[in-house]
Length: 262
View 1: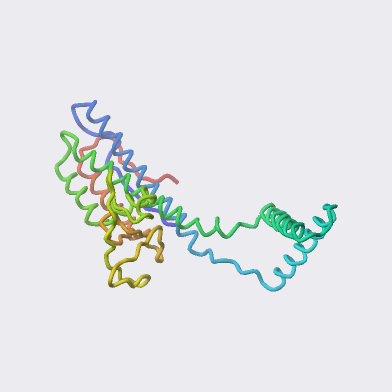
View 2: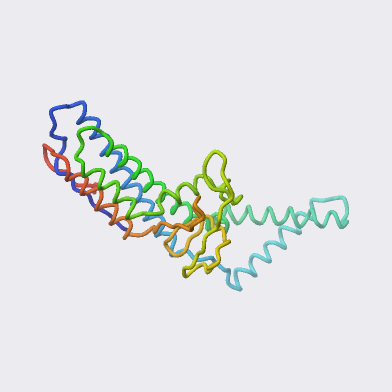
């Protein structure tokens, strides 16, 4: 498990304007909440990396085949209209449905559901980073905050240059899947070249959606370029550095705080 720690220099902001301090403290708590949400998503994503598509061994396949036969035989006995071609199709369908439901009841996980887990956690990581970035942008625009907050917000764009573009595609797959860009009247995408260890399209023309290349979650963005976010401890370290530096920019009073909890 990856655990990323944060130290808050105090308990309350040291400022004469308590209404302002209360508001800024709330925004800082929101930033920490998104930080730990990203940490959670990273751990869930990492837990799926050991999952490999399960291919039943010969003994298991033989057991499944025998059980399918038994279920199909039971379905045949229930039908009293003879065994016409149409009935055989219905028997096969009903037997298949019953066999799968029995497997699920005994703990078997459908491949479609298992396959989706890393994609769900990767998007959760993406959304947590995006929410963190948005909260930081709002904080940077608040009056009386240190001017360095804006620098940290700008650093988010440097550390995660594709964050906004990949998040927008994840939120608007209905447009990207049709080869359209962003906006109220989205225009057709001009798909740019992609060359990496997963895709080789030096002439462009390839639309990529909801893709995982190792730990990197990527999609074609609204500008036609391929973008990605690395769901990794390295990304969390960059986020941790931004948050820790942010907390140090403010004056605090009261005992310093350590997070997360035990």
